[in-house]
Image (cartoon, rainbow, N blue to C red):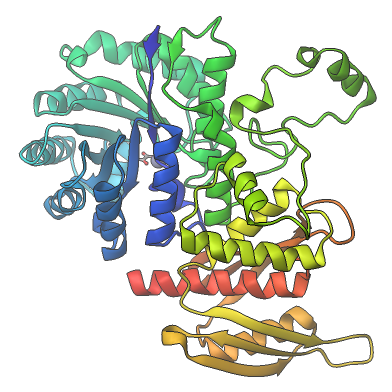
Length: 505
Ligand code: KIV
Ligand code: ZN
């Protein structure tokens, strides 16, 4: 069976999703989990885009062993040099050079002729090759490029040293039949094509990213670029978990394997969703909350008699434990640690101490603590680990005959205690106004949603918000048994992301 290289671009294209900005520690945390998931390549970022991104890629290259660490560069000298600076300490470094090749991009965006594009692509692949062996080249918007020019640029960049050529469906425009014909054309018309791995990178604007990526395997493609939960520009990228589980579940039809440890899929999905703030829709294939839930009586009856009647995959294969074990007030450190291990968390001593304190506080408010509660609690701890401002205290008075009033106390940079109060149209408004008086960063709240983590009146509430500042969106999440506290935490999370982006810039 042929092996398919899984190239994960969650930290690059995924992070380009509106509102998904990650700080350096969060990127590192996801990269470590991608290493456990056993992806072949981690595209860690776009170093020329900001000093913060360069630093994040540099740390991932230094600290994550196993997968190839790839940095993106557009076809210009500074970008290629920045990419090399960022990844030179990696065990297996790779530079990914890209340049648009479609008429529409060349004429309107680049304002360059075919000859100029060809020359820039060759020169920059050759420049990268001067630094290292493993070079990927992408003719951006390949699916809307004149095939004759596409063959020419692919042949020339392979000759200049590209070891992988990636065919991006940048705007998610193609359909499986057309994409297969394009790949077939490349294999027929590019004489040196066998000197490189052929890769694809599909966007999901028409909901076809996974179908397009899988269809071309039979035509010689051996690398798929994808993201966890399918996050990415606009409608996102091909979803890693869908690609991997389709290959595994239908191995009778697909004769291809991957090295992915599928037991890590659920945990990776949760981590990416928690850190980016991008919720997974309940009906999302493989990792949505309903993906293995059976509601109708007929289905439940079938499942009880024989699981395979209505389940084509075993949820345990993606790391869902399926256990209903709950912890409570009397559970000690040992039980909590054991449960964390079952759920796949490895925390440092400091992180464990903080998580255990939070667990005990939660157990005082909530009788039974389920796995989902523990996941929400750990996510909350991770969110607050590297924040500039930390919510220390929040108090609200409100009701139908009161003007909602909030007082908040924050711990600011250097441990400084900051307190203030404000009135609002409602309790959340009052809290946000009080916080704004302390952290004066202009922004607009554009989305606010609250849902319960588990069932029951004592369930934890999870708040997701989006704020906009300077034309960019920042997502924030917070969880607590009190939804006003969860709202305050979500706002602090979004503000901390905004501040970290300002520092990066
Ligand atoms: O979608 C795209 O074309 C890209 C390239 C940088 C490969 O993300
Ligand atoms: Zn892309």
